[in-house]
Image 1 (cartoon, rainbow, N blue to C red):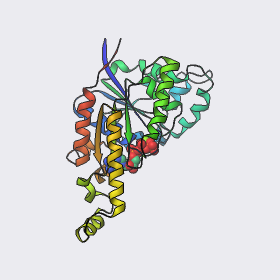
Image 2: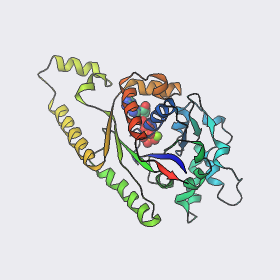
Image 3: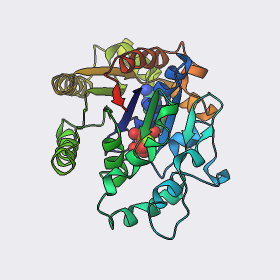
Image 4: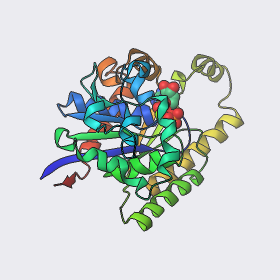
Length: 291
Ligand SMILES: Nc1ncnc2c1ncn2[C@@H]1O[C@H](COP(=O)(O)OP(=O)(O)OP(=O)(O)O)[C@@H](O)[C@H]1O
Ligand SMILES: [Mg+2]
């Protein structure tokens, strides 16, 4: 019996912090001595570049893994495409070609289980497999959710109420009904969160800080936005068993430019310490037991 935990990062809205969370958690897992594979299932290939790999230099990628299930395409397995990266995390990389896979997938019945099946081959080699998915409701997200034991939902300050979550829940329900597979979405991460304690670190934070210093208090607009985020956060806390908050931090962008997770570049930053704590919680999630 193998102990392996497979985690997908999902939200259909763009830019909510899926890739950032996936890579930074992968980084701390690696630092904890775990064998970690990141699977990039997004044609934008941000997880690939975020780990310092240039998609244009790759001969094989997740495109080939998905296409190998179709007749007439080479028989490439996931172990053929995995590359080591500077941080010690293994990567099954993506390239823009991945866009071409989806229309093919719609033509086959077991389109939702292609990734799960592909991972069978390598899961004996890893303690954790983290799957980054694109901002859509398409086949890559569904493949990620079906393959995963747990789903981490990332939400940013631009998310309005839980209406978006309802759409995601519908996908979870469909998977349950159609495939009999359970989707466990028990962790939410609020990213770039604007709590009162980190407002000065925001872009334009100095201006805001000075404005505060010389004014009677927050403007009515700022107060309204703060109330909205507070209400939203409490809704999220009702919907998920575990909710984590990562503040806005310039260190996030810098680490991505370096092709390294924050654990390997700026572990003492505020965002680094939050991802450290999230990673500890991820390790306490129930392990998927797969023979
Ligand atoms: N805590 C943070 N502080 C500052 N910037 C952040 C933080 N988290 C994420 N970002 C930035 O926000 C942007 C979006 O993050 P990210 O790429 O992780 O989102 P995503 O959900 O993967 O996007 P997509 O939907 O396009 O795949 C990136 O430029 C990233 O550097
Ligand atoms: Mg992304």
